[in-house]
Image 1 (cartoon, rainbow, N blue to C red):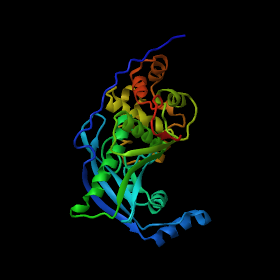
Image 2 (cartoon, one colour):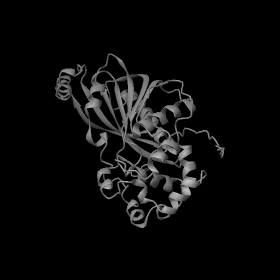
Image 3 (cartoon, helix red, strand yellow):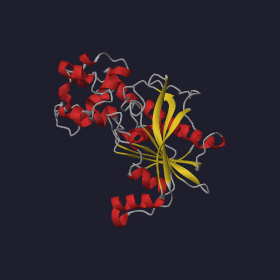
Image 4 (cartoon, rainbow, N blue to C red):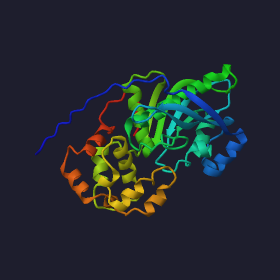
Length: 329
């Protein structure tokens, strides 16, 4: 049996002064409590929760960092209960996989989840992620550090948003600094990345109570490789190139033509630019995702435990650490 030892150099992240800087905000919409109750009733029927507060939502544009550590903008939303008499906890919801830049809450406003949480007394936060919303970068899908920072820096910008009541604008809300992270699919991965970053960097700006990461690809170099690098059909075949294209680009692992068959390499140069939907990309993908790769790449990756792509996937795993605050998987 061969034994492989991975030598990992752990780097200490430095929070740059611009991270979490609020650039601008934009009113999206608001609803009175009776309107919220009607929407909840229509969605949940007899199981609908009681709406407690009027709610309001703003689009937030803020500074964060890209995978290389450069200053970039990102966007997200803040939804909150309109009440001056209490301080409320924050829930940061990290959404599932999206490919189209427009398919985010900062463009679409309240949904049933943000309505529910806001009217029940939570400050609702949701990052669009890099490459979506206002960001025009290639989305760093399943890259640990930019996933974490884009989430954390939105929460930091929210504090500025609420503290701005002495200036020109006034927002009828106060945070009690308690924070819960929740996410599904890609958002499960992003939530766990943010939880790990908050604790590994000893960021005490927020009181992290717990995280709820759901259905995330936490073991990229193990479980996810086994899932994607086989010859079985997969329901969302575009997930494979959605991971590989940013890894190849951001880690400078070569060109797309060195990994993908020519017809796919050409298409993948533009299909992940934020203009196309996942369903459209699926329609031109084979049902077996690995069939977009060059046979030589499949063979080399399968036989080489030190393949550069495998090592980068390993660096972005999220399962091998011990949290302090609760994680509910």
